[in-house]
Length: 231
Ligand code: SF4
Image (cartoon, rainbow, N blue to C red):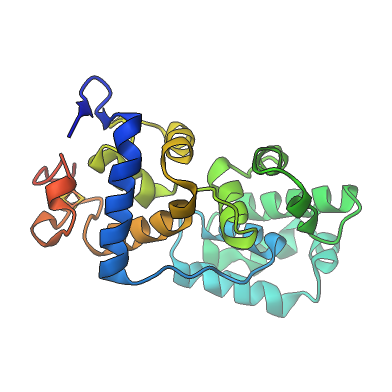
C-alpha cells in the first residue's frame, strides 16, 4: 500500500486515493451524509454541548436552552450559574457554560447578532477567529465551517482520529491537531464533509475503540490494522 513505515501512514499521494475508496465504501454501506440546517452560532453552541457526551444528552441540554431563554442576549444577561444549571444534562456544565458565554461576548463585542459574518471570511481566517475564543478548539471551529457554512473543512473528532490512524491516513501517533492539518491537506475537498460523517458512523457501528469488529468490516482489505484488537 506504499506505507510510510516510519510514520505509520500512507504517503500523501496515496492518501487522497485511499480517502476516496473509504468514503465510497462507507457511503454505500451507510447512505449519503446530510448536513444540518443550523446557523453558525447555533452550530457552535451545539458543538460545545456535544463535547464528551452523547447526542441524547446534548439534545436534552439544547432543548433546555431553547425553553429557558428567548434569545442569545437573554443567555448573556442571565449569567453563568443560570446557564450552567440549564445545560447540566450535557455534562461539564461549568466549563461549557463559560465557553458559550465567551462566544456570546465575542459576538456582542463585534457588534453582531450571530456568526453570519464568518461567511465573508476565508476558511483560514474563520478558523482563527473561532479558535481565538478560549474553549473553542479546532474541532469545534471546523464543525461550524463544515456543517453551517458548508466549507470544505474536515472536523476531527475522536472517531475520525481513531479510524484515520488505524487506516493509515494519518500517522499512528498523530494528535487531533496534527490529524486535522494532514486530513485537510490530503483529503479531496469535496469528500471532507462526507468522509467525516461516514467515519463517525463506521466508528460507532464497527470500528469501535475497543474490540473493533474487523470480521464485519467493509474496509478490512484497505486496513493495515485489521485483527489488531483495540488497534
Ligand atoms: S479492519 Fe478493523 S481496525 Fe480496520 S477499519 Fe475495519 S474494524 Fe477498524
